[in-house]
Image (cartoon, rainbow, N blue to C red; front, top):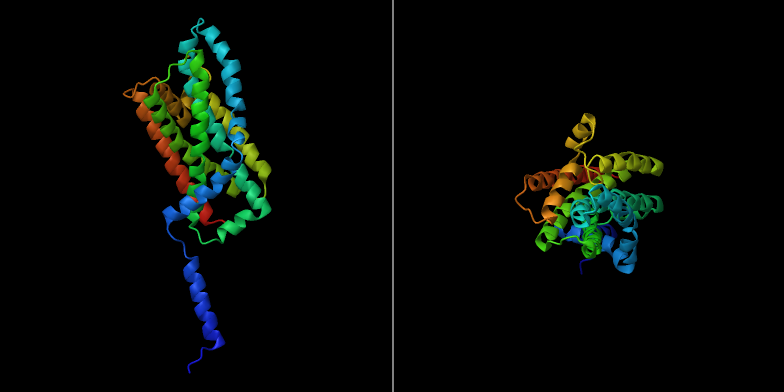
Length: 273
């Protein structure tokens, strides 16, 4: 009777373990990471509502000031202002996602995912795709809150606008994760870069105030700010004007942000230790 030596048995077991540990495919791995990252939203859906406090404060307190400046035309002001609030939701929501990764790295759970039989690219893309869910929910809530006050809802325009924001959110969320990976042991640096960049991007996008009457340097800065093109596209789409030139500019800005963010993020995740 043939017997297998202990060394051969160990080799067979190792081969079986390696075979079972091989990644099952990028799409499958991405879906696995997406489901894992989405579970906290399912367990605590109120966290999505709570993160809307800041955009709703801007809508409730800043909006009336714009109404007064516009001569009291509430509906026209909301039609201009609400799309900017949607971009704000996408900006603030996805820019802070890297903080979750920082926490996982500090607790050691991120290291466990790195040795799991999952594609490194899927670890980044699955996380970034998860940000689309709260973004769409929050954007829809903001629009529904504004409707009773005179905002004219164009459903196809809203769907298209949220789709463009989702593409942008994936890219910007990936950039936030990249920043977190770069600030692994220096979370203070993450928040310093976060706060230093976030508000200039917001102000120089024209989402709160029109920049047409601003100084020349501000107009130049707005011209190289991808958010300004995104804001213009959202205003056109939510008004139902799909043929406006601003729509194409917003789509290009969102797609470029997504491509750059995913490329840089995947590269950083593959180099993670």
